[in-house]
Image (cartoon, rainbow, N blue to C red; front, side, top):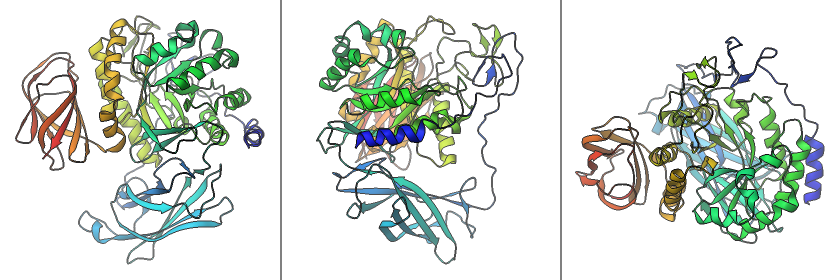
Length: 574
């Protein structure tokens, strides 16, 4: 079966045209579309995301998609997620004037059909009714009528609004795959929470995972010998991302040399984010790599692009790679890292399920390039952190902005963080401190990052020590249970500025992450109150940081915070 798939993919994709390089005048080097050398003048790089205009007419922003990115024929049932939200930016016009008071009385009647490639229906969920302004309503459906296959089914929804003749239509894809018999793994995304789970070999049990690791360059660490793997694993990291450098910088991994690493990774339960060394001009090399790697039990996901937006790769290059991989191996998602704040996000992000944001704001001048001796702004210059302010908030702003783009585009993307774990080079005058590192990691998590891949390893002794210490917390069962299975919410903070808080609520308990983004301590009472009418009954455990939080009148109270203090707590709710 694999030989047929591989042949078809090679024939179908190897000759796909790529958009040409673009944007820069002749002989002008660019990064994120901007000239950055002192010998070149500024010009408008373009590529900014254009938000739709506000409409006085309300829209129905209907979304119907599978909860899981893939299902296997060993899964007994699945479910669909449905949003019937009202928007003034995107969607289809509603024939009524809606308000918060009238939404509950307006019902949307859904008929959902699963179709084959030729349009023939094979299963349906009919006469399901939901009110307007519903988010993530879950509709179960059985697989009785479906035949497992390697290509997706089409999920088509026709919705009608009560007391009107208006209908709405939306479509998405449903993957219902045969369970693997080649010993390989499968990884799926839970679109409800953005989390990953995997299974290996003959197992039918999906295991959740919060990826926590570093980018690790082959020439700086791995190629010493295979004993580097158990050493890395013993530090608590659960994924390896081998960056092809040195002898591997422009050629695929030598399989005779690389296979012992893969075998040992399997035995250590280390998962692999595999860098396919994507070259926009050479699909054949990527296809060859996938043919070698796709059956390894340790494979978790693919990685195709390292800052393609910064390098101004052809705009359709990431999507070409993604479509190729999806056809070659539908059992694993694809990731890439974006460097620019706002440069053709839609085009580059269309080429991955998981987007990493590498925002490096520590110990750098974000307004003047110390490397190129030029200013840095929205249309000119390169300072190592695109359109940044040199604050921790650069990280959260970037992830929040990408989430907002996703909402307007109507697609499901997962976001990971790539915190800075390097220094003493180019734009960065020093390594982050241990406290700064933990703040950057947890700030990413607080704003929805569902994985962490730090750049890069080996790092400073101080950073390596603190990331080892944090590893059993962020990958531990207690914290992962909240991250992969609960909605992330905000909180009210009183008594301090620049204190970032995120809350995950599940089953009468909550995970609360509190970060002081100030280098100076905060004196006096700091109060964290939950929203939505929730109150704290007691502090159950402290996973990280200070045990100085107490409960008063249903709120968390501290008599002060140290500079860059991070607290991760589990609380019992009232």
